[in-house]
Length: 303
Length: 306
Image (cartoon, rainbow over all chains, first blue to last red; front, side, top):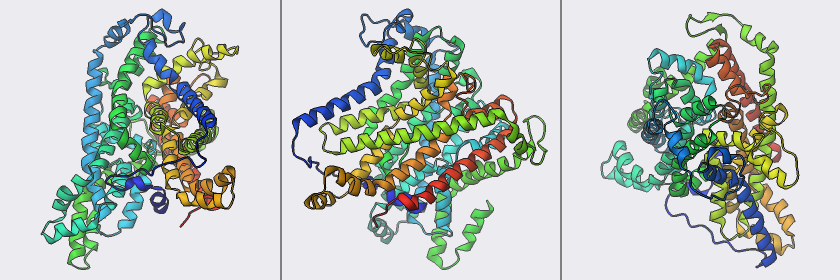
């Protein structure tokens, strides 16, 4: 299994500038063919993104028009849905945004610290039964959370952690997102070992090599980890549904779900408006962190 | 922590090895804690619980193989297995086929590659969210956007989500919609194929189709395999979308009762935690079996260049 992962990890694992090979058409310039290809691609993009665009436009329409207008044309801006959705729950929507942000921030810090430490050991140190530990680490990437959720719930319930953010943050501090350990191992392997050796000759121990040589060089991998953790945690529903049952500490996905279920299909405008609000952070991360996202999934096949 | 203590003691083969073992122990300490306390420990506990009757309030009571014999007669479980297998076996091939097709189209020197790639990738980031599931509920409702689109072609629509025959189809569509992430992996793989192979092939007079079949496809099989394994494992664990679209019920008529949704209902709806643990282990065995079959079958179709 290790081999498969290693073989399928493409060149993007190497740190530093990654010059894209210049592409040229193998068959020369063919205008008709090229136009047809672009037409096809643009059609695909439109079909795929139309529902999302419609969601944004419809959130700015009065409730009674939403289902009658499939177009993307907006006559006048109706921001009432946002005002109404924002205050539709026990708490204003900002409370849920803050709750989600706390969980996301905790998860990011946890993953960055714990996964980079583990990755340094796997990539740079020799230790007993290393191959076995590494194999176990890879296997845990594929382990469905459902297999461990029941005893984990019992454990956290006994610690009194249900309805706190701890069950969502503490596991990240313990490097349970092995996917990121693997991503960072791949990255560190690409850092020239001569740098470590030079530092060792200068008398640096492993903590210093890790903190002063490896960490600064693996910033791209850390950024990838931070961004993926952000998106996955922001979107996460299953574990939040299980651990957070008190409406006051609901996160954004839980609040949205509660809203949609309670409305049972009457106030779709407000539901759409808050859905749009909940996607804005993801969209911003996509805009500004795309480079790291694309590199990350090309490296390890994350989703 | 016995295993980590063992790890420390075992490396007495010289001072460097000892020192590295010691350093490794500290660097791996958070990971070891997580592995044993959050992953392996609960795994073992869930295996043990699967032989018990446990409702969280009373202590677990050993009941032998009862949970497993109960599975044989549990019709909702059989329904959820059928739903999940259909979902995995339809949505993953369609998703990967689309991803591969568009990656190949994009790889052949298209201007604006970065733009198209981003646009196709965006749904992968959004697809797992509750917001998109809410949107899906509206788009595929009786008076939703999808029916408006069909009406343009004069096709009579229906309540895609409210009818048992089509509800699962809307969730399959949603998974296919997130083809962007395997597509990016395919694109990265296509870039790895050395240009000179194509040059050699065209010198030999190979047509574009022949080049695709004899150069591109064989060299891409490791990536196809990688995507296949990951997406199957991923699809088996789908939960959020079915939960939101069906309001947590798996309806209509259990037609979207994903395996994980049924497990959630048993474990956290009915607090039937012994049975839920048994279900969890069955899921692990099923996913493991699919992965093992995949690895076994890969001998016959995956081509490794080195």
